[in-house]
Length: 456
Image (cartoon, rainbow, N blue to C red; front, side, top):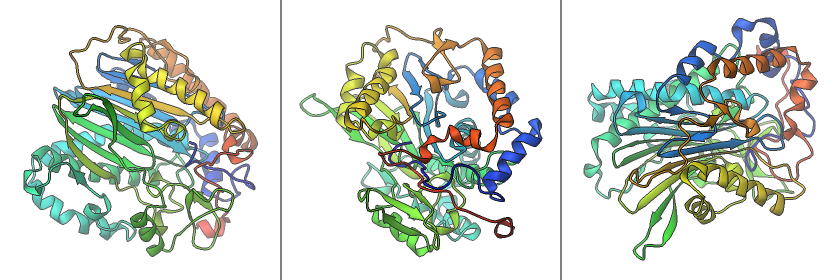
C-alpha cells in the first residue's frame, strides 16, 4: 500500500514475545498449520466464472502488479454467476498491509464471498426488516468499539424515500454486515495468520441485474464510468475513502481512547495511534485485522451503499490505493475507456499508474497495484477475451501462466510457503521493505512493542 501502509524506523522484525514473533514460530513448527488452505484453494480454482488472477472474461478485466516494497500485498477476485445465481456478480479488491498483509488479503479474498453468500441465503428466509432493527444491539454486545452498525456503516442509497429501497438492498445490507463481522472474528483466532499488526482493506460489490450494492472498509475505492446529459464520459466515486481524517471516524476512534494525528513531515495524512504509544500509525479508520487497534476505535464494519444502474453506466473500476494515489478518478475512467480492448483495460490502468508513480514520486518506491474493471454493457464485444488465456496465481510479478495448470500453481504456492518457514526473522521482514527508506507515505508507521507478559 502507499498512502495508507506500514513503515517503521525502528522495527526490522517481530518483537520477541509479540504476536508477530509467535506467528513466525507457528509457521516454522508445523506445515499443517500453514495459513494457506490448499484443498480449499484448489476447489476455488475450479469454480466456473471465478477469476483471481491477471486475465479477463467477457465482462471483466483483472490485473495486479507487485510494487517495489516487497511482496505484493494486493489481491482481487471476480465471480460471475455468483454462487450459481444467474445475472449476479461478486467483485473485490483487497489491499493488505503490515508484515503479513499479503496473507490477510488472500484469506479475505477467498473466504468473504462464501460467507456473504451464506448470510444472503439465511436472510432470504428471515424477516429482514426485524433483523436490521435488532442488529446494532447484537454488534455492540460483543465489542464496545463497534458502535451501532447501521449508524457506523454510513449506509447511502440513491433512493430518496427509504420505503422505496429495493428488497435486495435490505437483504444484502444485512448480509454484508454479518459476513464482514464473521470474517474479522475468524482472523482474530486464526492459528497461523498473524493479524495483530497486519490487515487488509476490502472494496467489494454484488451486482444483480441493475441493482448494485457495495461494501467497503479501508481506502481502496470504487469508481463508476458513466455518461452525463451531454453524453460525455464522467467519473462518479461510489465509495468513501475511510481514513482517520473523516470527522465521524476520528470521533469514534477518540471515544475509544485511540489517537488521531498527522506527523510533521506528512501533515496531509492522519493516522491512528495507540493511547500511550506512538504506534502503529495506521492511515485508515477501518480494516480487517489490525487487532492491536481494535479496542481503540478501528473497526471492520463496512460502509454500505446502493445504486440502481442505468444504460448510461458503462463500467466500474475497483482498485487499491496504488492507483488512486497517483491518478484522479477522471484519469482512471479515461484510461479504461481508451484501452485497446476490454481484456487489457486493467493492465493498461496499472501500467499508467506505474508511470505516474515514477513521474510524480521518483524517489519513492512504487506501490502494489490491483485493478478490477467490470463492464456493465454485455452487448459490446470483448475482442481479446482471455477466458482461455493467461493468468497467474502469483500476479505479484505481473506474469502469466496457463489457467489450467492448477497443479503447477499449487506447487509454486507451496514452495513459497516452504521458503517462508525456512527464512530467518530478518529475511522474513526483508521483503517488508515498507519499513524504511520511503519518501511517500505508508499505511503503518511502526509496529507496537510488547513483552510476553503484556501479551498474556
